[in-house]
Length: 130
Image 1 (spheres, helix red, strand yellow):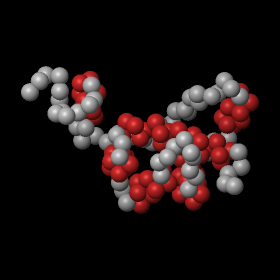
Image 2: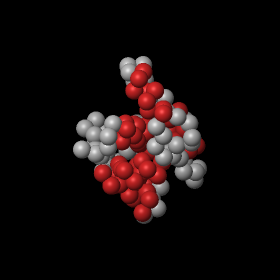
Image 3: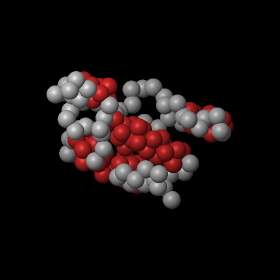
């Protein structure tokens, strides 16, 4: 076996395979907010909007309830996050299991989930569902 391949047939570079191997030691990746405010990529485009958003706090519970009730979807995020959140909360699925259901790695799912929550939060601040 070659030293450059930790998983035979994998297209991932060795450093990513090692990182994946290290993170698969039984510990679950955490996709929940850790209390830090996300840095918006578009904050410089409209400073008034970013200031208004920091004035209104939306709790994790409010966000999750909105997602489950309204089931928002966005064209640039083709994943069914309301279904995934339902599986997480009601069926006790881990984010790792959910990423397998989605057919992507958990490291690909995490930024999509973060972006989805940011878009839903913006939707809630802008007046909620249509």
